[in-house]
Image (cartoon, rainbow, N blue to C red; front, side, top):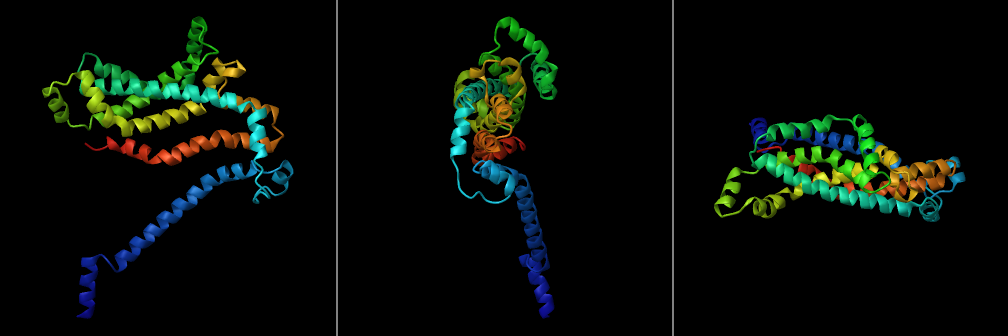
Length: 292
């Protein structure tokens, strides 16, 4: 009787062996994810710690904690490496690129998702095709065009291709979200007399903010870290972005590891912090349009 009552209670309450297995699976899941996170995050921690050491300490005790926090390494790397100029250029190029990607992508996603016009499917297919085109497939022709238009060694020489490269993914993500918005909402707005511009600015644009945060973060990461086009189109040292500037810095100070690690930490930490603080918006934006 007692055993039967215990088994019935286990089935009703979800406790007993099933609860033990569930707790073990949760423990294993968290242990595994924490272990994997440590494996991937440790190189970043080691990089930051090494940026506070002296060169002798890096070679003698590479895995020990630094004997003191030497912020002079960061200040010296910032000054001698001309990092302020490179950071300013990266901020300008990245900011303008994100603004135009979000503007153009939101308008295009609204048109493809909620408006019907001739050739819309073919035009959307061309944007999707842009997701599969490697950067190397068009930069030779693009370089010739920019040479003729005198766009090299200018901010526009980077901003224009960055916008073009970032638009396909941005349009695809925003359209996927707008497809999940009920058409009744659009019809009710049109019955109230809303035109396309009012409908977009007052209804669609606020709804797109979570997905636009995702697109903005992806665009910022890609633009901030882009190297190939920045090397091809920018030769003026006063216009170089951080990735190109870091290559020049590493070639000059390739044996001065404390300055090299400090420079790497300076340019890496901002993007990591951006992802850490806004990773929730990335997940939300990617899953908002998954279910209708």
